[in-house]
Image (tube, rainbow over all chains, first blue to last red; front, side):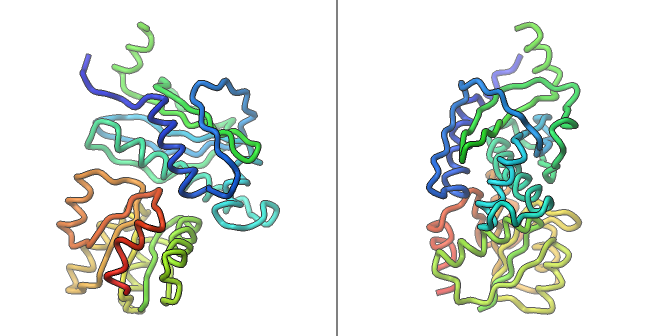
Length: 161
Length: 120
C-alpha cells in the first residue's frame, strides 16, 4: 500500500467543468455530475495512455452525435459540414486536454501518448480497473470521462474491495 | 509581426488562432504548422517573430523543436501551449529557452498576460 493520493470523481468533475467552460462555452450549460447514472449509447472513444510512475488511460466516450457537437463547437462549423476526420480530431483533442489535466494529479514522472480514437465497440482496455469517472451532459448529449489504471496494485485493491 | 502556431491537432490550432484574435492580436500575420518538423521548416523559411508550440507532437515534439532551433543559433521568442503543465515541464521548457508555458484549457486573459509585452 502507498500513501499516494489518486484523482477522484470530484477531481474529474472539476477538470471537466474547466475544460467545458474554457473551450465549449457556447451558451449551452454543461452539467457535470459524477454520481449521475448514465445509459449512454456510446459510439466513439478517445483516449490517451499514461506511462511511468502511473500506468493507465484517460478515456472519453460519447455518441456520434455528441462527438459531432464537440467538433461543431470547436471548429465553429455546423455539425453537418464536418468530416469524420474533423470529428475524430475534436474528440481526440478533448481527450488530450482532459488527460493532460488528469495527468497533473497522478504520480510523476510519466509521459502521455498522443490521443487515439476508436469505435467504442473496439475501445477495450484489458488488464485495467476503473478508478473514477464523471458524466457531462451538454447540448443534449452525454460524455463519460473515465480514469483507468493498469497498475497491479490498483487491480488488486479493487478486487479485494 | 508573424506568429507561427504549431500543433498536430487542426482544431487546437484553430482554437489558438481564435484566442489570439479574441485577445486582440488578430492583426498579426498568423501561420500554421501541423507538426514539429513542419514547424522547424517554417521557422527557417518564414522567419516568424514568435512561435507558439504544442508540446506533444508526432515526429518532433515541441521541446525537441525548441532545442533544435536554439541549437542552430536561432533565438526566436518561443512559448508552449500544452495540455500538460507540471513543474518539471516548466523547468525543462525554461532550461530549453522557452519564454512561457500556457496550459490548456487556457483563457483569453492567459494569452494577453503572456503575449502583450511581446506583441504590443
